Image 1 (cartoon, rainbow, N blue to C red):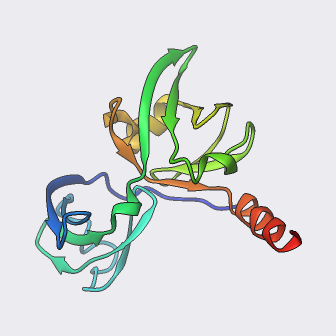
Image 2: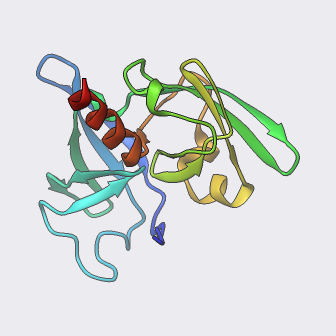
Amino acid sequence: MFTGIVTDLGTVREVLPIGGGHDHRMIIGTSPDFLVTPAPVALGASIACSGVCLTAVELGGDWFAVEASAETLSGEVVAATPENGSVRWRFRAPRDLAPFIAPKGSIAIDGVSLTVNEVDGDVFGVNIIPHTATVTTFGTLQPGARINLEIDMMARYVARLREYQR
């Protein structure tokens, strides 16, 4: 079991392309206490941002800077539809990850571990309860937005083992 504790909900203040424009430097705004409580954040610290552990390359009073590769943001929001007391979110997975996504399997979207409800080709759906939407970035997502997508590790191992059985 794992308990992920959300300690702050930051905002992306600035996104700057690095090099050829596929990788980015991001300035993340935080609450004033985030970088000092319970212990000061040091340069080089790994900070989980929407499920991605990113290295703090610069620190300010109420912000920190990170650098991220283009692969970090590879999923796309397709739709969000109210369903009973939750919201059914649909996402389009990159073609190379889609085969690893299965109904009732695990997936992490922007750091939130979820159960897949349905799969149709490279599009899959999950449900988000109101509390999760409030304390994560799900409350701010819109169709067309890019997300961080992490597929089930067991699916990756099974696929890798099948490569060697051929």
